[in-house]
Amino acid sequence: GALTWTPMDVIKQRLQVQMVNGDSGGAKYKNSLQAMRVIIAEEGVRGLFRGFGTGIATYGPYVSLYFALYEQIKLYAASDRAFGTNDVGNLPFYVYLGGAAVAATISAAVTCPLDVVKTRVQVQQKLPSGEYQYKNGVDAMRQIVRNEGAGALFQGIKPRCLWIAGGTAITMVAYEEIKKFLA
Image (cartoon, rainbow, N blue to C red; front, side):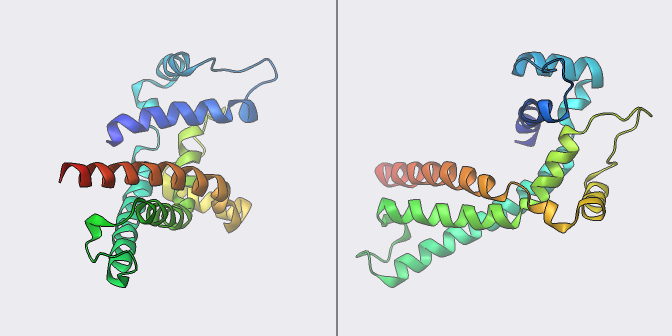
């Protein structure tokens, strides 16, 4: 999956931050396709995969924590018998909705520092020396903490949690309800 989502994430991140880092003459990137062309022209195809390792280091722990929490929430809801079943596959849709949202929120919050590092690696531009500011994710984390303080690793935590919780809750309800229907 990382081979597909990393280039999309790099393009999205670059489009989002370009005016913050950009020049006063306008946006460097006009749209996603043009951004992809510029990145390839300036950095090669490798530029589309900037932050590949830090992306895996972010989403691996996120997904692991998310599914562990989500499954525990379902088990708790089924063991409570408040919903008339002890079958985790036959809970009401709102249990899946709430459980997915809670698990996603916690997982997104815990992995926010990793996501900040990933984003910084993906959006960095070459310095006048031709080098990049961050050598890798570990170097990025060290520099962020040293230069901006540990709190900088939690920038954007609220929007990250809201965005991930909403999308994940809808996805998991659809998955669970389709699974029930097919069974």
